[in-house]
Image (cartoon, rainbow, N blue to C red):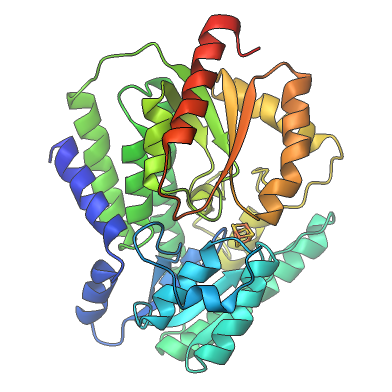
Length: 388
Ligand code: SF4
């Protein structure tokens, strides 16, 4: 397949608000179920081993007018839950037999309560991931939560997974993690060959298609990129920080790239890279999954940070790892976790002399000129004066 064919496939999945690929998968086997999850981290291996197709629920972006969803929320709440409700109230999420709501923030917690009231026939679970300094109690707690989730999902699907089932799902998601790491590595090394617009579409397709299909398409894409090298441009290298939950509209990503910036790291669709290492696919698989979360090295706004200076150092470390020139803080409006972290992150970055800009967006933002101008000026200033 050519690069264009893979990207077209991914774009079709991204734009498909009816979740046709998931519905097709459901129709192809008796007793199959689909289980949704909200951002940021949900243990997809547990859904998968229990006979569910994990389906990421990210809202409708700028592709659906939000009318009913607005009636559920005050004006000072981010856009994501409004468009998730809009999708649900229009019947587009009726394929889901279960929905997991991770403890990302109060908005998602409250959304889980609304779901229980609105859709009493759907299994709703608030995923309370451990946020404590003591790893032993975190491990014990999270392992217990995973076992309860396995039990509940098994009751719904009629397929209580064996350890071997769960190991198989862990191995499959390890493959997915690996190919995503390969995509990110290649983009970091040669961002001119692997535009973020294309990477992002692939990531979003991976949230709504069977994992085997995603891995296959991602490998095809990597092969196609090698066969189709592109011309290097004199762009600045930036990392984008703050977009880990409500996703920016695709037009915003394109605007940043077309303004003269290579995005060399980001936190888009972060859940698929939340576990930075493979999960061991041998031994007790529940304990392995729990341990992978507790011992995970990822540092982000939605994880406990024990080191008071850790957030201040984080941006310098990420910029160095990506050989970046600067940081764009792109944050959903009214996003508490991202906006509460931003002063610490930005303060730490500026302490190290790293150029930064910041703007806010909503997933349904339709005008990109201001972003393009801001990112373009930022890129030029980096090239001319090192960002000062
Ligand atoms: S965008 Fe921010 S505030 Fe809104 S649901 Fe996500 S984490 Fe919570």
